[in-house]
Image (cartoon, rainbow, N blue to C red; front, side):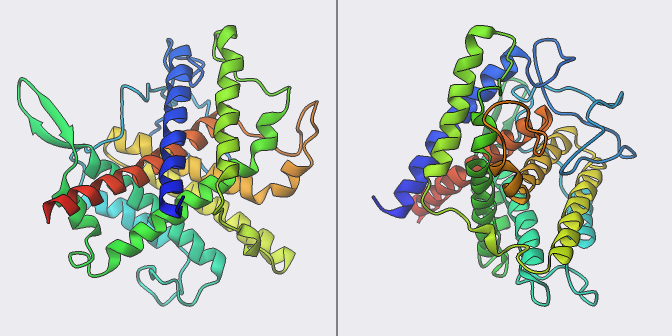
Length: 339
């Protein structure tokens, strides 16, 4: 079986399992302890603190719980100068770059491998979100019907090599880089979820065991993927400098989420913050490999912990980027048939 076929099978199976888990969890109210049978992610005002690798503001009185199934990520019409300002702020304020460069370089010249990787992750996240919007575009809006589907023109404007002056293919490469990073994190965090003491409380005892079984099935599937990203080259130098750089990563993610609090579109803010925290959680896992390896089989795990919000964000974010990879293949087939 060739590499592309193996990747496609892995993505399809993971998406199916993640959808089953998310539907069951949301139906049983695991995502939001204050919700009425439905769960979600918080949305706060522009002035509120942002989320990052860890977020002490999850239970803020300004928190708002949202049903993710009733608010799917798709095209909302939010674009133009306001949307451009948000992404411009994210790149300008948080992507490491030489001081004399106005905008971050796609090639990352002049910065270390870790900082180049950070830029690629943000670019990959941006590409993933743009694919979602292109794949679920409002094609028809009448009094009798709203029809959503793939918009090839919108996709080409964002990723076509000619229309983007060569940037489109680089953005898609960064999407795959993001996918491999989050896939790697899922394979690394397996010991945390395998502990007998770890339980998923769905509100229905008969489904708790099934939920954990499905969760572990995803993680074992991720671990079986043969082309994992090797993060050992990251932060491999001076320990003091590595610790400083990790803290910079954490602070940058907190600032990115804070910027997303200022997005005027509620659904855009909702899914943007969710996927940002999911990526932040993935990096937290990769940065904590030594702590995860020391987790005891029984008893509490004091060295490494994931909050419920981080778990929700991690799996939803990976579900989103997996869907992006799948939708990318769909667009390729559409364009091939149009020739």
